[in-house]
Amino acid sequence: MVSNSSSDKKFKVLVVEDDRTLREALRYNLVADGYEVAVADDGGEGLQSARQDDPDVIILDLMLPSLSGIEVCKALRRDGSIVPVIMLTARDAEIDRIGGLESGADDYVTKPFSMRELLARVGAQIRRMDMLRSVSQTSGDQVIDLGDLVINRGSRAVTLEGKQLDLRPREFDLLAHLAANPGRVYTRDQLLQDVWGFEYSGDTRTVDVHVRWLRLKIEKDPSKPTLLGTVRGVGYRISV
Image 1 (cartoon, rainbow, N blue to C red):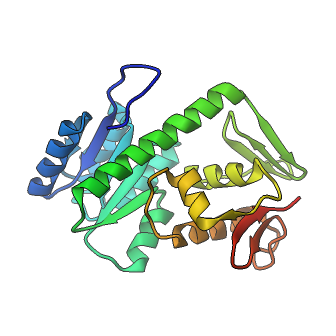
Image 2 (cartoon, one colour):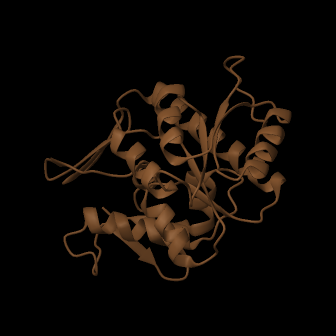
């Protein structure tokens, strides 16, 4: 389990899974790893629990009664929630992974999966959020001014030519990380480590997908990006 150096807080994980056997296996292993665990067996109950219980991470099945995992995740993001969501899917098609990411999920795991890997991903998400909170507390309302594009890391707000942009939590994290060192080239693996979590082992195409979404929002012509550039064969950078 991830420990919180600043307190004795016991991190809470919400498991939303309609398969009773898997739900109980997840509960057992998470509790054994030191987490507080809440469970729900359908999307509607899961959404209510997420709103009321303030979990640190949500493990969310894609296919659920009442509301699908995608619908639950979209509702949370509309609420402004930045709680990390790990989506579980029984299917490995790229369209399902992309659908989960587009709904605002932070990670996905395809069934059947290794419990050790899932626990590692939960820990990685908690460390990432802990790091973001620490940065926010120490930097205050640090503003990154790139001319027309202004990023306020304290309030997690981004404006383009004076108009506020509606960014998903992970889009903001990626943009703020790149913009903190304009001109520096980051490889996809570096971005996965720095933005998605220290032990994140997802497909590097996840980075490409989020870069594409960002370009749709910050570039005048996303097909010919001038701000969020690609360095062929290496990775991405913010140009100024």
